[in-house]
Length: 210
Image 1 (cartoon, rainbow, N blue to C red):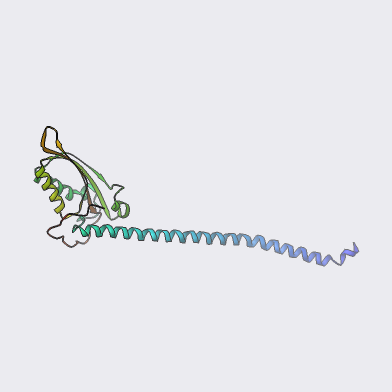
Image 2: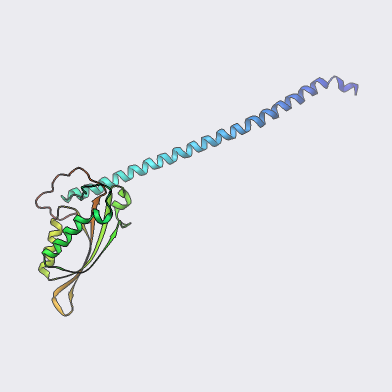
């Protein structure tokens, strides 16, 4: 044992040093792990923010394209005079004008139905907080001349109305009578906006390719 006494001090120093190293390891390791986790979380949040900014830019660009396509048709989207209106109240003016156009052209309404904010519409997809959309499905009875006048009135209406689909068939018992299934899409701002420039007197045919 005597021969090991001279190494006793070295052994004690080594033991103390090892204890210090282990203690430092156990103290520092959680901090390193926590810091690495914080950096990973920060990087993830940064990527999420960049993704949201890119999505916002995509939505803004898409809405601009949609608005430009309507502006090219010399139409404007209906704007309510009050805020916080329900769907039925919001579209009342457009409904009423549409029904008046139908009656004014001596076209009979056999059936009519409504649905709001169709998922397939780009305004619903990209601007649901800015625009409301309504599909109107109608079965109409008329003659050729009156149906043509109704379609012309819809084209000349100052607010944008999109004809989704139109199926025209002669009535079996009287070929001069037409039975028309017509699907229209109405658009309205969710809240009042500044009045847009008045459309030209001859509105022409709108772009139906939205």
